[in-house]
Length: 372
Ligand SMILES: *Cc1c(COP(=O)(O)O)cnc(C)c1O
Image 1: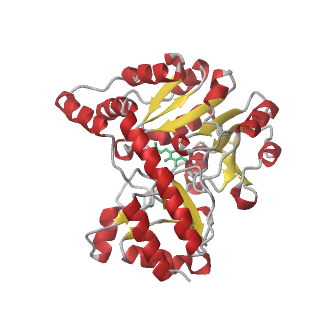
Image 2 (image 1 turned 90 degrees about the vertical axis):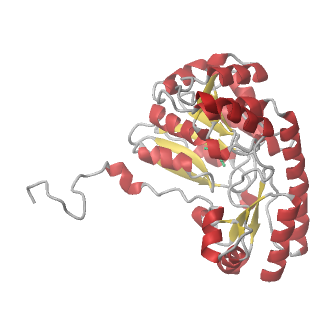
Image 3 (image 1 turned 135 degrees about the vertical axis):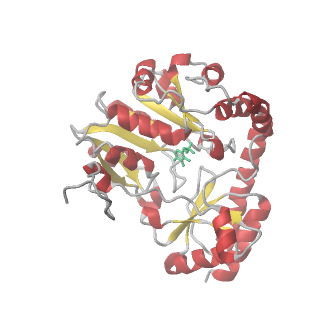
């Protein structure tokens, strides 16, 4: 065809890198399950959200900001940067506020990954690291976790080549809940060539109770080429408004700022996050709910003889075996949404977000009727 007439498919060739991209599989939304199965009450334990809801202080801050929505947001979220800098005792230049932690991963990819570059990731883990590198025509080298999904620092090191640009350490790791102990992280960092950037994804750091847990901040302070990733989507209960941040040396932050859109964080997210930071009551209640809920799930799963992986996070990976697909579907019919392990190649697992006592109880009751 030579003319620019209308055909059913566009003749415009998208970038080749897009051929390899797999779309993100999100947790099923509540409205969809309500509509599909004609249900009123639906329990969503699929996306590691905070079942307690948003911080009330954040909600109040949003209400107060609404009348100013005709103004562009603060280009660098300087109020939030200042608050973070003060709470961590680090300079302002160490912080980069983003449209969720996901945007930080995209900025890292855009700023550092050249075509043909490699990133090293544990497997299974959060899919956005690979997405970001594929989009930049790089590729992900996947290093399997060991038995019981524990981290293998030596295998990660062995996967590093001349092409490696970034090593991603998701700790606690999504979807396994396992973590990389601090001494292992230090050994890894000390063994890596200095041209490799290490991203410590600490999205779930508040839930980790192990004494030797590290969110990577200590290494940022020591001057390592480390980016520590944080989000307001999980314990702060603000997933819907999209805000997260990275902490790193000033030179690394400046590099990422080069590829940032001017108004990446909206005005409501900015003030909501600032308010959430001051809401210790909400934070403590959320930690408490999670500690109790995690124990409740361990106990309930144990009674049902369902194997699970002990978690440092707000979710538990459970092994339902060969009938996982059926059980997952039947739970949906009853209005309980879990995350299927399929996306991670874990066909016999589900990831269960820790909910309120009542939510966990309902899930365990349903599992008791469907499992075995
Ligand atoms: C949820 C999550 C994030 C960040 O999510 P945002 O909603 O984009 O802030 C980052 N890493 C991991 C491992 C996560 O589970």
